[in-house]
Image (cartoon, rainbow over all chains, first blue to last red):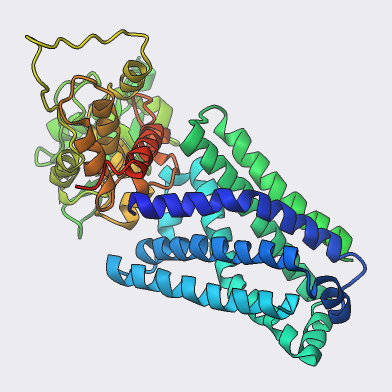
Length: 109
Length: 117
Length: 244
């Protein structure tokens, strides 16, 4: 792992410290009394601030998880340095595209 | 990596257990994230989204969600400890910090269960 | 003494190369006896062909490390009474190193990584015109001090989980040495150490499991030395000092 990757991984971890706390609170508050699709979307649609919050979360989580998957692929799944790097980058792209699509869908932007 | 490798006598210590919990919870979250995003992406098709959310009120789904909430919380708390060691040279009583991280994870999972049912 | 002398230890010893097997020996138990004493007894009295290494027998030279009941240990300072389970010992060579024969591993990769981490002193301008003053209470001196007592035994390298998962990782001993060297203000190329430990599978490959610290016979904490290198290389790379 290069200093750049290390900085990205620990940096995204630090960025996510407040994000995870808020997300955990949102989960525990929202789940009370059961969820319905209408209730969720009524709360989220057009809410730019939360859309920005979760966009940042998606970016940080995608980079963080991608680097983590690269490391695990190298150490546990028997991939070489090069293929582990490619796998990590592909995973980042997958999470970024699916994650931003989810943000656009849920927040109706 | 063999299964026997994980139970080497030299690995019977708190630091290794914490590292495995951190790695396995991270792996679980990484596998869950694409599914999480795909299901939320259903919001583009209102009926499919309503159907999915209705399905998620199934007790078994709620139970799995509680495990994921616990995984997120334990990965978060374990990560805080790692940052404290690597950036602030936290050295003392590692086992207490590790135990606190586990307790935070289990606590978050239980809190989710209490609210969800 | 007489009662203890009649008791015996059941000792399983790894014989041969990687395709070898454990061989059982019975060794008289003593009240005070180290694991190295047991191995020496076997070699002198039961099987002269047993291969193992030792030199000083007092915990200084770092040559007698082996895997004792599954954990890497310095055998000359490990009392049998502390580690034997029901009078049983299982002795194997160190892990994570190529096996030569019996209890002897090839330490070449270990010392090559020591060099790759720039684990040696590079002289500066020389004392005649610039004599370095190093106050004992200075932070860097204290950091170097905390890392410097390494005896190169290879126990931490054998215990390292990351080395067991990827054999290109420099490992705890070499990086611990690099951290001690980095804190030596007399070194003429301290930035070179940071470059050496950030290339390839260097200090950033460590996941802070602390298996090295758990097993170090002289109670060093290579994990914290590596954390120091992570911080130092991060600062240097943000300032652009690591690029050519």
